[in-house]
Amino acid sequence: MRSEAVPARPPAFLPNWPARLAWIALALYALYAASILDVTWARFVIGLENGIKFIGRMLPPDTAADKMALMLKGLYETLEIAIIASALGILLSLPIGLLAARNLMPAWVTWPMRLLIALCRSFHQVIIAILFVKAVGFGALAGILALIVASIGFIAKLFAEAIEEISLKQVEAIRATGAPFMSVIAYGVMPQVLNRFVGFATYQVDSNLRNSTMVGIVGAGGIGGTMFAAFQRFDYDFLFTILLAIIALIMVSEMLQNWIKKLFQ
Amino acid sequence: MRKEYRRGVPVLRDISITFANRGITAVIGPSGTGKSTLIRCINRLVEPSAGQILFHGLDLASLRGKALRAARRRIGMVFQEYNLVERLTVMENVLSGRLGYVTPLKAWLRKYPREDIVSAFDLLDTVGLTQFANQRADALSGGQRQRVGIARAVMQQPELLLADEPTSSLDPKTSVEIMELLVSIAESRRIPVILNIHNVPLARRFATHVIGMAEGRVVYDGPPEGLTDDYLKQIYGGEDWLE
Image (tube, rainbow over all chains, first blue to last red; front, side):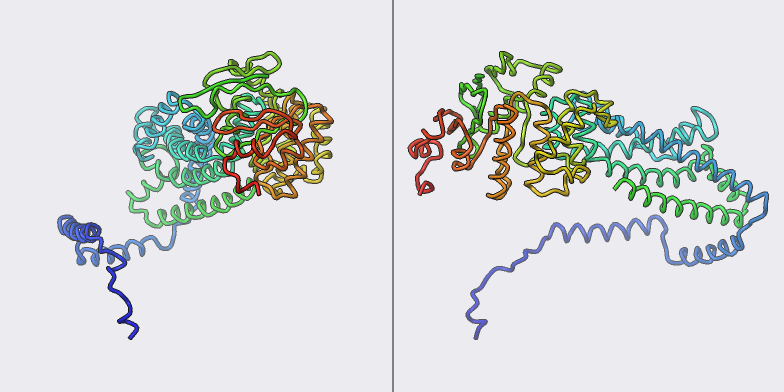
C-alpha cells in the first residue's frame, strides 16, 4: 500500500559510463601487457623454486671475523655518508625552501629556486651517484654529493610547501611591529613550520640511510659496494649478514627518529 | 593626522580624517565598508593607492624599507583574531613587540635587553598573565590571547595604538574587560587609540570620539553623545535593528 504512495523518481545515482569504460580498458591493457612481457604463472612457479634454493644458500649467515670486519667497515662508511649528506642537505634546504615559498618571495626569486628543486628531483639517487662517480671518482664523496642533491629535492620542496600553508595573520602581526625581514622569518614563519621541517628532515635522514646502502653499487662508497661484490661472488651467506645488518641499522634509525620528533614537539 | 586615498574599485572614497592625538577614537560602520582597510593603511599592512597619511608630520604613505619599519614600530596594533604566534610562548609573543628595536640575530637567540624583559614582566602583571609567561600562546583562551596581543602592541612603546575589531571574537563580558584594559592602558601611558568596532554600545561607552563610516565614506565625525539614531540609520541602513 505504501509503495503505491511513493511517486516515481529517477535513480539517485546515475551510472558513470566513462569511469566504467576506463576501468575495463585498464584491465584489458594489463592483460595485454602481461602477455607481451611473457608474465606467466609457470615462470612464477619456477622462480619460486629458485628463490627457495637462493634462501637456502643464504643460511646460515656468514659471521667469519674477516667478513665481519669488512661489513662493519662498509656499514660505518654508509653511516658517514648518510649523516654528512643529511646534515649538509638539511642546511642547504632551509634557505632554498624559504626562497622558493611563493607567499614570501617575489616570482623572480621563487622561479629559479623551484627550477633548482625540480632538477634535484628529476633523477633517482643512483643515477645522480653515477654522474658524481664520473665527476669526482669512486668513493664516499660521490655518494655524499648524490644524497645531498636528493635531500635538497625532497626537503626544500616540502619545506617551501609548508611555508606556503602558514597563517599569514601571525606574519602580519610581526610585520606590524616594524620587525626587519629576518626577524619576521624567525618569529612569524619559523615557529609555524619548524616541527614539520624536523619531520621532513628526520624522514630524509632515514631515506638517506637506506639510499646510502644503494649508491655503493655504482661505486659511490658504503656497504652497497661490499654487498654487490658478495652478490657477484655468489657469497650469499655473507650477503645475508649484510642484509641483517642493514635491517638493524634502519630499525635503530627509526627509534632515533621518534625520539627526535618528540624532542621538537 | 590626515589621510585620503582611493583605489580602482574604491573601498575608501577620498576620505579625509583628522584623528585626535589622545583618547579613544572608535571607527564604526557595517562590514565591508573599509574600516579594516583604513586601519591597515595607517601602518601600511595594506598599501594606500593615493593620498597622504600624516603622522607627527611624517607622510606614512610615502615610506619604504627601513624608514617604514621605523615608523611601524612607533605604531602598535591589536588584531581581531589576536594574531599571536601560536607556537611561541606568551613571553616570546610579548617580547616580539620589541622586534623593531633588536637585531634579527639577537631576536633569534632571544637575547633581549634587560629593560625589555623587565617591562615585559611589568606588562604581563598589568594584563594579569604573569603566571602564563612560559606557556605556549595556543594554550590560552580568547580573552587571555587578546591580553597578550595588547601587551605585545604596548611593548613597542607606541605613539599610536591601532585596534582592528579587538573584541569581535570575544564573548560580551570578555569584550568589556578587554575594552576596559585598552582604555586604562591608553590613559595611563597616554597612547592615543584608533579602533574599529562593530558594537555600537561598546563604542558609545568607551570612545571619546566616534567616526561613522558607510560605503567607504565618513558620515559621522564627532563625540559619542552626538551619535543619534538618524546617524546610525545612515551608517548601517534600515532601522529595525535599532528597536
